[in-house]
Length: 269
Image 1: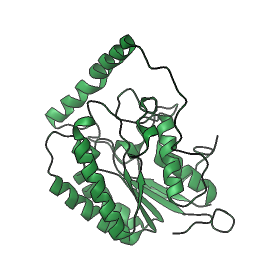
Image 2 (image 1 turned 135 degrees about the vertical axis):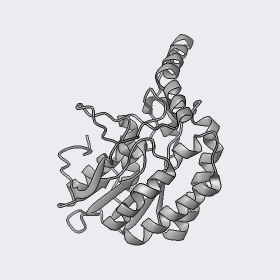
Image 3 (image 1 turned 120 degrees about the vertical axis):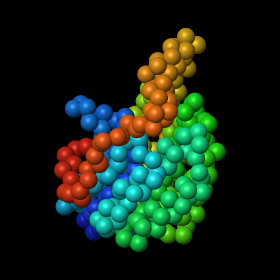
């Protein structure tokens, strides 16, 4: 799908379907009303401003494992036959202490094989990663996951957006206090990365580093670590031990492919 830089001659994709977990749901990019926005909503808003009648669905639900995404989201997304489909999943799997990587690869094969034939452009991602106790243990499996995504992208003609390889997305200032989800600024950069991967004209350099900042002192770091352990790490471990998920009982964010009223959300500022 080649897209002209002139919206008058080629407005661009007329529909977008996003699949995934909390990353695609938009945590932790909070709106004033307490709902989550995130990179997929930002991308949809920009595409809607370019293409009258643009339609958008977001099937993502926080906490979902790859098997749940494949079972619950892939078939509905494939049936929508959108111009653009984004598929991001597997990080919740590789962060668990025990994982069957053969099963993960098989699930990815199933998902990409089902999605690629029916959409104009399939977008896969290497999710961003920063250093910390939750991500470092799973880093080798993350890289194995991304290597397999590259193989599938080459086989099916999908686009891969490499967020994992962007140093700026490892900057702690782009991550929420839970150290698992991006801030509004991080989501904005992801939206720009996908926008550019679709061949649309760049609005900013999403890889540009943040301005230098003085590192926090030892006391500040320790206090932040303690708050993180109490408010985020302990509950996360508790859910893993009991088999619960933050997404249990939650519906898809935007389950139907419907016209998207973008307003000014996601437009250049």
